[in-house]
Image 1: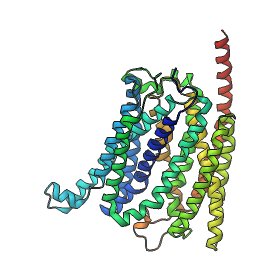
Image 2: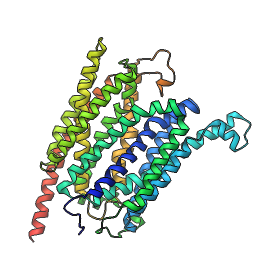
Image 3: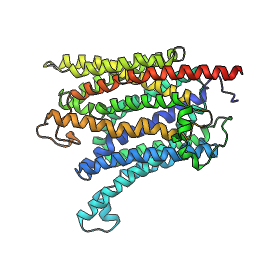
Image 4: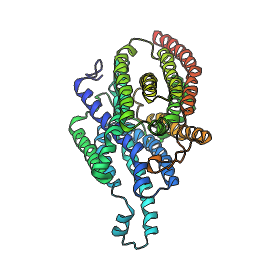
Length: 452
């Protein structure tokens, strides 16, 4: 039994905050700026951008499956986290150096078209390589480390902090990195970010410690562990919770990739306008959910999901209607419902994340991280944006004089993406009752077995 079995510990909190936040900032930059970097500096080729996103999602899922299983087999999270972050940072820095001009100089290519093709191939491959090390360090090892070092009694609080980090990272990246790109350029920005990630990994060599209770377990055959019918049947609450994570992720991915573009084009917000709206909504939502973090450890997490899903759907429905002739009124109403949406967004993430950890079998955390990635990353990233983009195209709201700010399409996002997100989020009300029922049966069965 770990000496930290009944508390998370100060050092673990520092590890959680540092590695969790830096990891989320890195993912936010990849999601928000890698595509824009390719679009603005290499080629306005949307097929390449789409392919890069899709292959990155696949790479993240496959990597997490393998790396999570290896970390179980070796009984080691620390090495995967620390050295993974070190190499992750290097790949991020190198990504910014890819350009047609550099390909011509480095490989002595005189034909610009050939150099462009090589650059496009390298950005796709480079993004996958970066994702490989990022998923190894963060998605597989770091997430398994959190599970190893938390107990059900305080897991909601820990998960509440973790669930806020993607939004804090998004706020930092959306608010500050655009100005940094204008000031120092993409190459310098990626070098600085890569240096920070690598420094974080070096710190991890000395700072991160595995839970003493962690043991070597399993073989590479365990990559398929989470897909075995017997494992699924024996852990139904876990897989039902993962279904909740998948539906929630799809609902969010319908609108999230387009939200800033929507505020800028459809609502005609300036940078300062959407920074204020976005910042206040995220800030207030994060504070409220930090308070809820303590509450989730005292109330049935599964039943509290009803409230969280309802709040998320209500916020999204309100955002759908929040467009008026008066910009100040639009900002106020959109910001208010954005705050409600963000509150539900974080609360669903925190509750479902804590439940996933609660239902994850002891000593099997690593080999199940890939299954979690399928529901939390792969399916949402493939399905959500397809729905959202189809809605945007069907609405047919065209941006006049579309330039680089249009990013991926001549069509601007439509308010119906928020309504679609709300409708998909309501599907959670069909899954939660099943989870509650199955969990009650499992708890009763466990009690009987313990008495025997």
